[in-house]
Length: 112
Image (cartoon, rainbow, N blue to C red; front, top):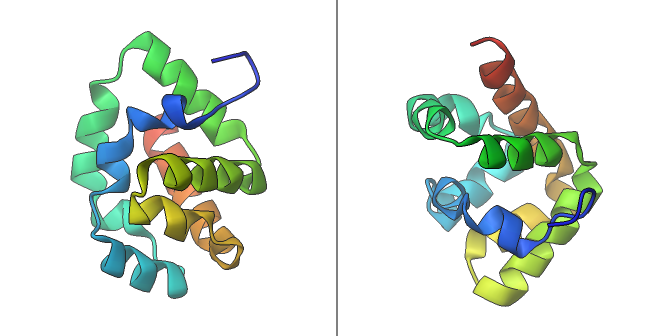
């Protein structure tokens, strides 16, 4: 990973988090701009607390990226892995959904 570039290899280690919600549910949540992080808060908190320093740095980089850039990464991830959750997250009409959930992750991280 370069200092300012994130690609599929960087998000691959978080793939389990992306797949916490089955794709059909994730799309339903995305259409309603639901706060999925709240629904899976305990699992997400558990995963976040297990991150090593390198993983925390990657997550910090991800949280600082623009949603459009993250969606481009999700598109790349879908092209490589065919994980449907990435395809959903790459859809530009779900930008607000991503913003809501990234903000919730930030709250979890910075309120500990």
